[in-house]
Image (tube, rainbow, N blue to C red):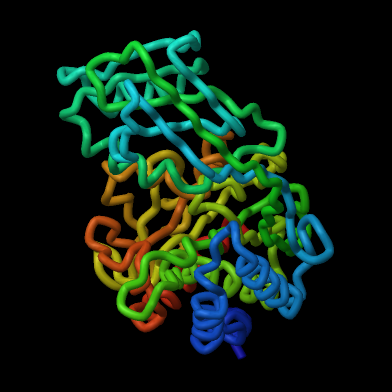
Length: 420
């Protein structure tokens, strides 16, 4: 046989063998993804709220999946990364102006001190939000101040006070050693009466939060990390819609968590990652992104090559099937690099189509991005149209499993160059 023909045959056989090796490792097992989704978004998980015992059940399930895959724990032997916070719960609040007790729609108290007792003899700074002021910007500046203050708010902003009361009267959390901070009273009034009292009482409870994290050590670059992440908490039990009061969070973010676990399984089976891969399910995203903050602030950011955070991939994106968008697409070339690995496919990574929603700063990529890491959230959520978002109707039955599996495949293949 001619030598050139022989070499051509040899290279053809080598090429065939490489293709056969790659195809022998299935990227996505649809049944596996379906099982993960159905478990995480089941009623037994109680909507996975960070403050409830249900979150531990979800964490144990994810940890067991990591163990079955054969991953190594990232922090603790049980795959948890535990940290402590203080939960602040409002017990009571009362404002009396000239012997008249105000309704809860007439004032808003923001503060984490266990107890506040003010009256006309207290030396409290008085501020105003007038009719001609921009409420949002003025409100933000006052909230960020470091002194106790009473803010007289023009009655034209009554709807803001009522709406913010529903938001800020919920449970909040602060760091275990974080100062309680100043107290702010926003009240619908044109002037402060000669006689008044303000009383508020909070309960402070120390609680444990825990991410669930695992690693596949890198072969030649073990001290360089690629992070794959999603948040596994949701909002729990909410106001009933018919007979259902459990917000199961199938799309938000059981879909992303299932994708992250599926990627861990895929890369473990491939067993060719040169860099260390970290797979982490973040807690407490819904109440302030505390899980990702703790993780990001306790890793050497200079060692993190990239972070691929996955959130809400259960339905077609605005761009149609076989598409994902990256928040903050233009802040690094991660999307471009991943797209190069998909040039022979129909899949496309797009820039975030919702810049006004500020999504880049609203998910778990934000802290590592602030530390200089190319960290992006990958999503398909049509956030401006999704009527199931944060409702009891966010169920597995509303999701497109093919959209989830194609997204996982695209991320797996797109990240090959970064992983290897």
